[in-house]
Length: 313
Picture 1 (spheres, helix red, strand yellow):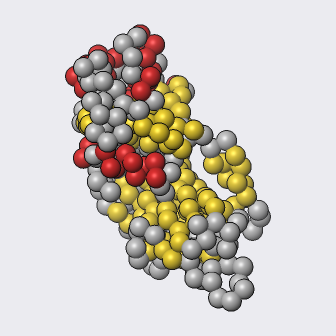
Picture 2 (tube, one colour):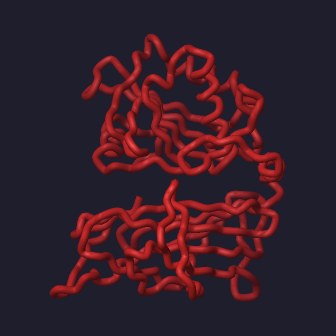
Picture 3 (cartoon, helix red, strand yellow):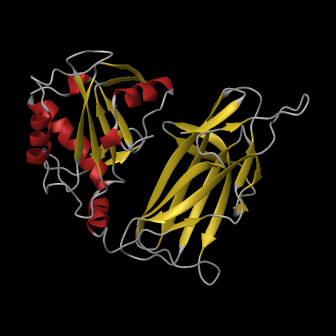
């Protein structure tokens, strides 16, 4: 899929058709969110600054959502709500100004002619923290923009002084999806492989990291790097606790090299693998990562199965 600042109408439709849900780095906003009212301008400043203060992300104005899953496209009249107006609201409502924001105006020629959607791409900011129009600082938490604690404001202000480690996951060998193979009446599929990478998005180098990977108990792990916790574990996914098998990886010298800025390091010499039940559904993998001086980071990825194939979202 193209980068958000390159999206066209078909990319928005793909979000709906594939039921790509909201996350810490993706948020859908109905067209009513863009109105020339003070309360709407405040919400815009909160949402944009929260992404910049956190891991960055994408705001899509013009997509309705139900239970955090996109449910429809309804755009704006660009003669009433223009790209320039949105840019001005962002720049005037947030202190300091956030570098690198891109606003993509997408004509909705098929679903709603003469209307547009706006996709706002916000990078993680090294000049954080950024203050919203109500003189408060916000971060992304699950699907929301929430106020930051005082210590979090201080930690974000030291972003260029401390590591900023993050995990990324892909199915293997084809990141777009894997076929599920079942032998006879087996309740679970043959192993499906995926890989995990750790990346440092800060100029500050990291020598140590403690990584936790929590695999949905509905799945059957075959190969996961690290040590399995002996007791059952429950991981938070949104507002729900998901029974999980928890694995921990201790990244430290001399066995592992330092984690430099921009360096992507694979966890495990071989791909991870899990087996899926015959029943389709959504299965979760959550993760946490800690490093000295760095605030803990966490995230969730979703395996979506229809009983025949699986994709990662």
